[in-house]
Image (cartoon, rainbow, N blue to C red; front, top):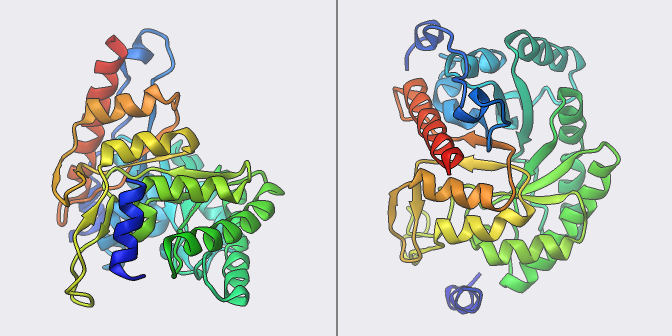
Length: 318
């Protein structure tokens, strides 16, 4: 898309071995609300992307993910399909994933799906193929007891053209997912999808009860210079505003410890402020940690978990 048309539209919408790394197994810390016999304001899960580098280096293994999460004091997990890309229809492998998760007392929440084509491809045949490529992940998610798959809102053309194309692909996938009792949720994941207003309009245009959002605190960068596109303009969306706008359709939340403003600047996450936005929207489900500092992934996951617990306790007192 050309930069001026995008700007006009936006203005209008305003490695350590796994055995050593795991350390002692940690149980989730009881919350203030739990201690008082109340349900917690929100639950905490771990996104597999947090350990993407150790997984790629094979110092950690996908099948150990439930155990890894438990070692970080987290009892729910969010998978990334890239780490078991050829196993979506492997019944024995999925059964082993179920066995591992059950053995650790860990809930399997969702699967984040990438590399299956663009649901908003301008070519109708390619768009339909992308829809069908996701079917196997819907059935895999059902087998694992997940409630959703996460997809991307990628397309090309003007913002309005992309909106119609993505909505078409999303609706078709939701029709299939509905037969399995699964949701299809879109994350703000770069490009136009990181404009919360555009994304919400797109999902509403898809017009299906199974369509929803996965607000990601740290993914509100719309455009920035890269090696491939050094002349790109810096464009971003305010994380606090974006999350608030996306929460009405949220079926999950991704937690990163940095946020954006409207001017392309990043800053540390204000946990109590952001989590108040989440719970004020009536959301009390899983908030997935998606952060792993290089070389100290597990420690950094625990740090984010502790911040989420502290914010939860603070909000519970109010």
